[in-house]
Amino acid sequence: MDHDLAGILVDERAIAGRVRELGAQLAADLERDLAREASGSDDFGKVVMIPVMTGAIVFVADLIRAMPMRLSLKLVAVSSYPGASVQSKGAKLAAEIPGDLAGKHVVVVDDILDSGQTLGLVRELIAAQNPASLRVCVLLRKPDCVRVRPVEVDYVGFEIPEEFVVGYGLDFDGHYRNVPHIATLRAEVVERVRRRSTRG
Image: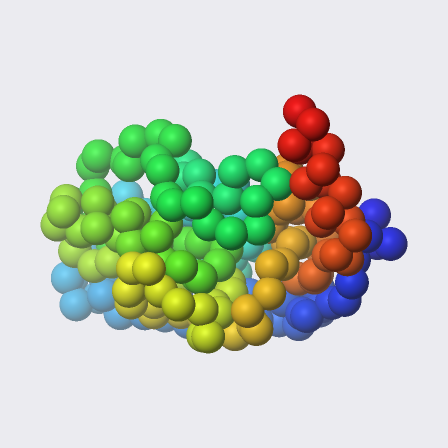
């Protein structure tokens, strides 16, 4: 699998360190919100992490283990890069947004912010439920990408250039999620997968 990679943008050691930092920062901010509510020990169910599947699966697994607090996990599935595409085709919900988020402290977790379509849709639907707070945490952000939909992001792991990347949960045609780094693919690999996909 490594021979399919063109280069590594962020290695696994850097990812691990940054995810621990994000978890500590998120936990501190959420604990501060809970303290202001004077909820004391009655904070069961108050913090809800909502990872956008399937790209955020690896990121959220490590992130919540770096958050020493009570929290629950509810999933949302959104499709934006179907098949062998390296460009977003627009966000489409594959499952309903959890419907019991009013008064909760919600953190949406996603792998990458590029066009903003996925996060914009998810954020809008959650905000309509009137959560007590709503934060967005992304592992990667492409600052030079043209946003189809502007999105406010509260926590960012890494800024990366305008390149299609795989690894640490991000895929190409369903593969490479298990690469431990954030990496780019060789052009010939992308072309080979596209040709295979076109043949059906």
